[in-house]
Image (tube, rainbow, N blue to C red; front, side, top):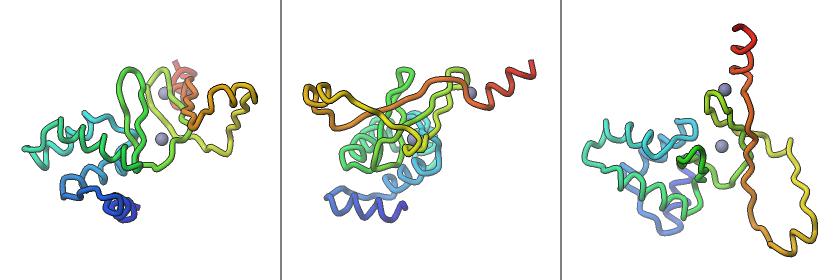
Length: 139
Ligand SMILES: [Zn+2]
Ligand SMILES: [Zn+2]
């Protein structure tokens, strides 16, 4: 998957460096990380890489259409994905999980469709994940 994404970035004229590949690998490995979380990892390996560079790299990946950015609890979280998809967000532990888009249908009123001409939808379901509900039962 990473190789294909690297190719896509190159095709679109994006630069590819070892630091950028590492950031892509971290995006693939970590679960919806924030820029700070990615920076913690890159800092170990490339101490000279600044937070600003990591952040700007994420912004450029987003512009190239290979990652998604989701704004949650006043922080941006990133994900290696070429398309936005629905998520479930736990109000207790804060976990963010991908939902199968096939299980959710959004029906929009035609007048709204005409009025707003939406091109994208970002969907979050907020609730309590199974782990949190299970722990709640025990206490
Ligand atoms: Zn939870
Ligand atoms: Zn996701």
